[in-house]
Length: 82
Image (cartoon, rainbow, N blue to C red; front, side, top):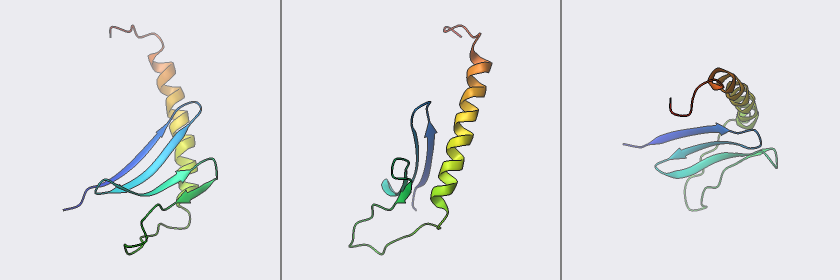
């Protein structure tokens, strides 16, 4: 059995998207360099991701930030205790 994870997260100023397999990072979006990075060691059979994975990560960041704005508006009147 393997554990496969995708992480997508954002804030007002930062974001992350990464794919992990069995706790090892296989791919992540470098939003500063505007490219996908595959930090796999040279002694394994290299796994590669689709050519448009980085573009998909940029789209996911736009969706995440729009959702963040919606949640902020919906939660603005909630008391901290709630």
